[in-house]
Length: 298
Image 1 (cartoon, rainbow, N blue to C red):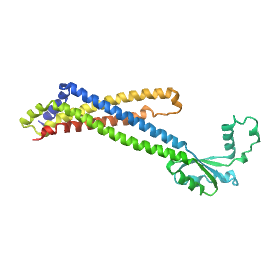
Image 2 (cartoon, rainbow, N blue to C red):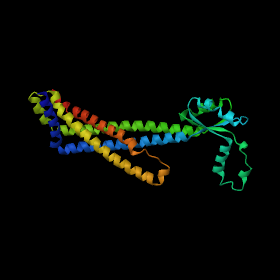
Image 3 (cartoon, rainbow, N blue to C red):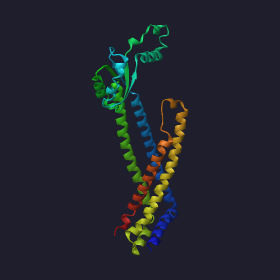
Image 4 (cartoon, rainbow, N blue to C red):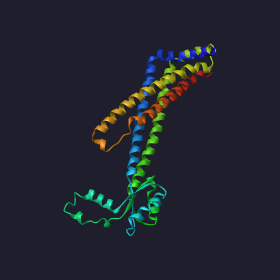
């Protein structure tokens, strides 16, 4: 008997979708549009955060070793530098390597034989240091300078502060806008479902008159909201992935490909699918359940 009742409720839920085709279409369309807006902004935020993280990794700290130390002694300092808090890794660069880098960077400007007069001894052994958290650059610079054998530390503190500011602003603004979009989307989708329910108020009144329980009356609407929300989420996912793939192809194939790197589709596909399906189902179930609340009051 319970299985028959469950089958009837599920059938009623699907029947309601097709019997009110226009409102069902409107609900799916609104759900899809809201999710596409949220998804587009979410992908933008994720890619901006990834870009900022990449820029942070390129913000290097250079530790110059005391010129009185031999190369072997300079190399022996590596464990001490890597033991400093917030140091992710440290790469040793000898005097000869430093001179070669200098030659590569400024060779075109000095093509009059100036480099023939250079000797590696005019350069210092050094360590190229990458940090775990760029916001702690000033503290890390001070700690590395305290390592015995380190003569000086060069760190672009202004760049570090700029990266931290950009990251914080992006995080705060993105969080605020995503919350606003979720609230607005929930409001729009819930009211669309309520509008669809309003057209069925007489059906609800008849069910109450024959003694149906609130749960029995609510179940078809919950199932209907779940199906419509899931359908809207899946359609929005398909459109979002298609648009993102198109944008990705344009960026990679265009001039901006060398300047801007976007996450591949495979990296965002499954999280986006789970998010869209989850939000669609949640809003559909909650919207379908709350839409008939007023009609269930005695």
